[in-house]
Image 1 (tube, helix red, strand yellow):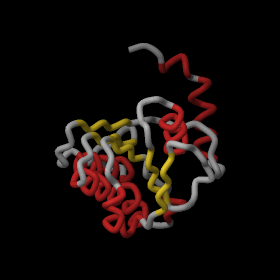
Image 2 (cartoon, helix red, strand yellow):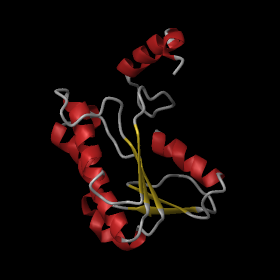
Image 3 (cartoon, rainbow, N blue to C red):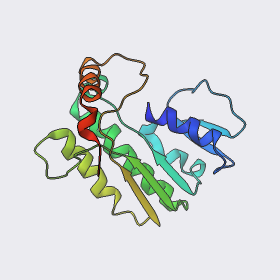
Image 4 (cartoon, one colour):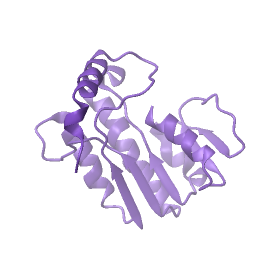
Length: 167
């Protein structure tokens, strides 16, 4: 969801003359600035020559429901973003921007928070000129699948939004 929205912002903005999107399947988007590269994330290094860019935006992530196992989820949420960071750094990327998660903490007792914290820790070892980590809370927007827990949380957060204002 975030990657889709970000892609539209990058394509519609004036900051970049070309946007390369590494994807698993076709996007169904046509745009003069878009270069779509369909890849197998299990073989990222094969596509290294196609990864030349100044800025890398990484919105990779999945759910345990989709991944089926913690190991599969860890691969998508941690291993792929770290490998992408290493490969793009090697070919000259200067900036890496990552969408992580609120409460990311490698020492957490909560598996998801710990996983995201490990991702952030490993990413910071790669000496990009600039590394930005965004830690959103509840992700609200149009999704392809229904998530009951998120819909309930969305209603609660909207009802209590007055609490979440200020510094």
